Length: 212
Image 1 (cartoon, one colour):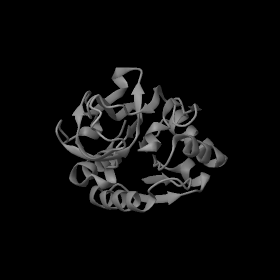
Image 2 (spheres, one colour):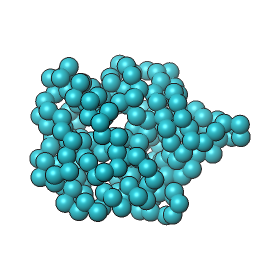
Image 3 (cartoon, rainbow, N blue to C red):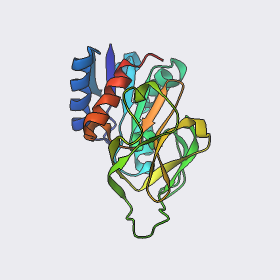
């Protein structure tokens, strides 16, 4: 079993790699590699796409790695291998991003990435720090996770999901902020599971054990 964390030069790779390696050892879930090699992405059993920065630059960087991009799409879409997007990596799964300029996303989840606008003007954006998950729909990645468990966020934009069945969890920040999305063999987390202590590590382990 091989899990590939995709390196397109815009992601929090070190801490993510360490967290996934740790949970893979504990779960006997095989090897975890950080890779910019399209051949490794193509043969991996599951894929992780991190992201750090603005939607347009992340999308451009990913598509700029044409071999990696094609291998990722073939594996996740055509072959249905489990895929996890983290932070902006999750946002890239949307139809469209509205950060700085309109930018087409992967189109795997119908929805747009828009700026967080809390109803309470005293709340700051970016949404930064710990917040409590509200689970909207059950999913194997939530095994052992309950509404009220908290995870760590750092973001100014979130996904406005068109199909509510594909918004698996949210948090309250003077309004709903999408936290987890998913369909079929794909899932995305707006928060950083690698920084979310027990809850995040449990969700990483659940992803590694997921057999959709």
